[in-house]
Length: 216
Image 1 (cartoon, rainbow, N blue to C red):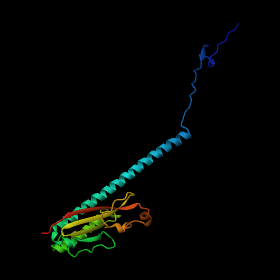
Image 2 (cartoon, rainbow, N blue to C red):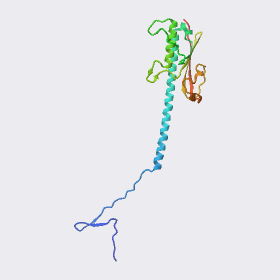
Image 3 (tube, rainbow, N blue to C red):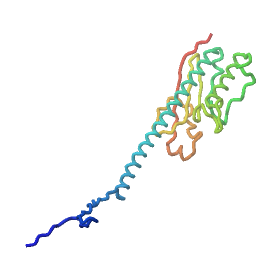
Image 4 (tube, rainbow, N blue to C red):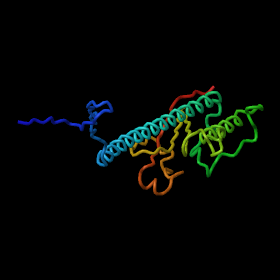
């Protein structure tokens, strides 16, 4: 009875007559990512990036609106303090539609920052300078004004020491705010295109500062 030897690799004869076994070669199984997996990964990544960009846009918009409100508050307090320092001319500070670029106040003859002015001249200078601050004309760059409010409109009323300063400016939002004063409400399209205004994307924010300033 004959018997045989089954091996996985062929035998070779060594130069000295010995038997030499060839080493086995492992066959590897290659694996990779298919086209479907690539598309799914790209879809998930794109969705995540869109969410991040949307969050950044909302945050930037909120920061801008908060900055505009802070600017309006500072401007309102500024004109109130100017009126308090010149309380004998409260009626001269009355004004409507300040900030309307089609009807800007004329530059006063006297610069009260460097020259002596009467109380009436000081009131006119204060209004002119304050309107310039509303529009940010004192801070200019290569692209135009840098400070101020977006399309501002302001009104100042004074009645027997009761002073009210109303400031309104444009914001891009769909949320409507209760209107407490008619100052600026008729000029919502100021600085906006017809499509933006008719679509309701532009609304006016309004800030009212009321105080009492007694005469000397």
